Image: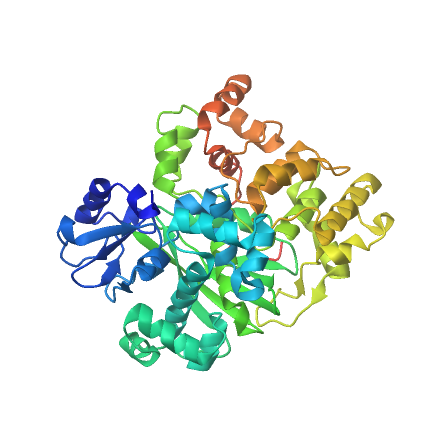
Length: 497
């Protein structure tokens, strides 16, 4: 059975008739009589059921000969919540494709990271998503190019390479085929805003979106030199595949359920080829593709998490821009307060991180990479010796590739590899899997914050911990709701700590 046939036509058509935005990014509707494909919420007149087909990805619709609708811009809808959390090989491959791995390393590099042969991976993706890795990467490049054409004043040549195309000719041909318009037509339709060496985009997120709660979490865990935050915004340095960069996100709440909200992101990149990777990492940090309605519905009747989910609708699981960094920060934070961990991490960044010049006050360094920290004498690190040895051992495993946190390997395999390292226990491995790999179903029953939150809410601790099994498959979000009760407010002035 093809992936198109796996989509139930009646259910999909019902979503199209109701123009339900919750299904944007879940499937795409192609109309035979017009030759275009749309998102389910497209405001155009609903076509007859006999004239439509449903596809699991924009690439599948494009491969079937359809062009993107110029009215609803279906390729710019939030990403699929299913593929964002899926632990399958297809889900892992999709996350790597979004990060630009095919553009940088080719299909062979993608297959190597997922652990399959290129031929088998192509068959698997065609079966799951209706298109192979090259077609999926091409669709992603076209989407990035369209956003850059419509929101920046970059030249078409710069946009072509920023989006991942190998030549301007390939860029022109793809834009004409996908959008039935030239790059000049797309640029003229909405008018570009001037830019001064930066790229500003709107990142689509599903609603409801508890942006303020996400910002509070990020601000509470800031590392000096790498991150800064203020009232309504967060910024950090980015260690990207080709060169350093920064991102500044304007984050606020968006509570209109079923709508599409946008987070304004301003990227300053030294190499425009890193645009797609920077955008994907920012979306990952925001947990932009989460389906908050499905998560909230699961907790609706729960006496512990239910009231918290209703009080903070759309709470996100904060992601990361670099898995290795998340693992290092987690080990540093073992058995110390968040404030203490920030101080120690800031000292390590100042001593071992790479200094960079940025236009954002407070952003001075890239987080030190695993190879650098693997060569540090554990005795010189500002922490207990056992933890220093654990940190250096972890970084050696990351630098050698024995442990990979790029969201390509199987999550369970990564957890087993982490626990096998000296000084890495279950709490650390689970926290890394939750933040670095986006695992939606992990819970930390021994965490002091969990225990304080449960006690503060007046619940019986053993009973609440026993009930955590009913929170599957969204236990990571239950954990975030508990932690959210302990978060201090976001500072109103720019803060490094």
